[in-house]
Image (cartoon, rainbow, N blue to C red; front, side, top):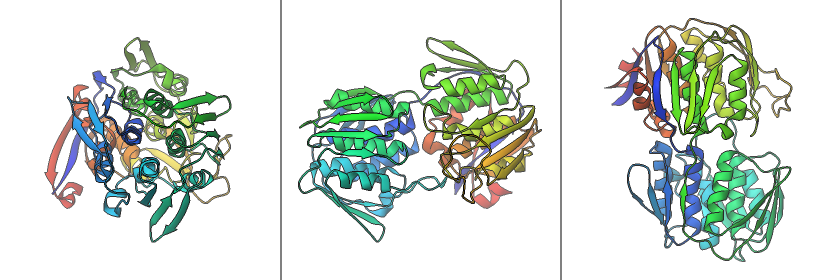
Length: 443
């Protein structure tokens, strides 16, 4: 038996919800805590599927977790009991490679499976492996596993990432914090979630200096300590509710939304004619006049986030004119477009770059640009979620569409969005969770 949503759309979303803790920070910070033998208290941890999967991964290695209230999590890893991660645990998401740092520092070796995760494009781990080799580790790949060892401990090094990968940056930060000597990381990712983990590491005793031009200098220390840290609000979740408010012609206040982490998103929204108001405790998003189409190009922070692209493409179907979306981060990010087309959205995909930003896929055969003509009248239909962010765009589209829609594969949504069903209901959405077999749901 599987669960699915039945959604009746066509009504404006109105009300207030609270932003959850950032998924992409919380799941990494569970692992950051394992660099110390002392307890750590994480606050504002979202109760989502990816946190639970990462918890299971850490528990296999030896971590202990106790929920203290709804979103406070006590973490303690006094000792490690395994250095090898089985595939059935390690391939549920992409966090297995992040265990490299605590395992190498505390045990001296790690055997890690190739990571899993949403199928949105190639996310190789060679950046991680190349960096750890520069720090003195041995690393080999065979039969789906990376065997990594550091018998003489990790040593500081000069590392330049070919691309400012978020997870590679965070992994190097963890490895370098307890390495001997200094590590200079160039072309590092600068996303808010990275800075949040840097702040957590500093609380634990790390010495990390963020310099100009994407450079981070890490001075290795002998020991890290337990701490208390609050996970920052999820800017990607906030953007989803912002789009839902405008696409449905509604009015939504997102408590705890932070302007400083969303400047590019807010500027893009304003260029479309979307309205928002900044308050000390959140951001209000509201519809006042017809939206106009624009061109957006995804980029690393502080550019337009790739995880904002899917809901924004849906928003372009409700704007007047011809909009363009150029994806430069992941090559296969438009896997969700067919579902929006089935609803009635006029979206055309192209292999060529329809933008000015440097793009790694310029000479490739990937569909990584889209032309969206609007406004389109969306009609309810059956949709199956292909990935996390695409799934959220489907949910919002179903709420905008006329009539009823069914949405299967909702477990993917719940991996990254805390209480998404309840939050949308708070805003007046007509969502019913039903239990049946997939075949019946598809009918």
